[in-house]
Image (cartoon, rainbow, N blue to C red; front, side):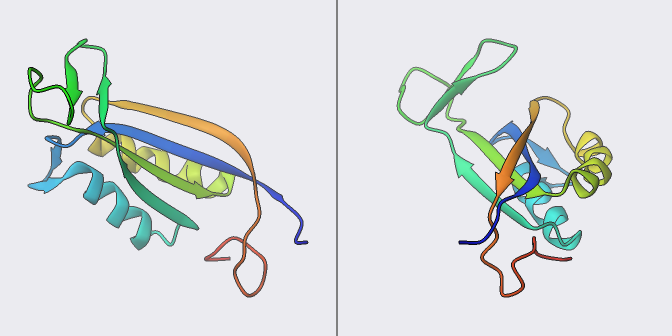
Length: 116
C-alpha cells in the first residue's frame, strides 16, 4: 500500500448563479486550479444549502429561488494551496472557503501528488 502524505483540502462553497468575469464562478475556480497544475479538483452539486443570508438555495424546494449550491474541492500540498488562496479571494464575492488537513494517497504513476 502506498503511504499517505499530508495535504490540504480546499473547499469553496458558492452558488450556481455566482459569476467571475462572465463565467460561472465554480468553473472559473476549477479552470484556474487546472491552469495552476493543482493535484486535483472536483465541482460537486449540492442539492440544498444556505449561506450567511439565510436564503435557501435548492434543487428540491420548489419555493426556493432556482439556484443550486456548488462546492469546488481542490487538494494539494499546503504550499500550493496557500499560493492559490489569493486567487480564490479575488474571485469569490460571497461564499465560504474551508481548509482541512487531510492524508492523501496518490495513485499517480510516481506516487506523488500530481504536478510535482
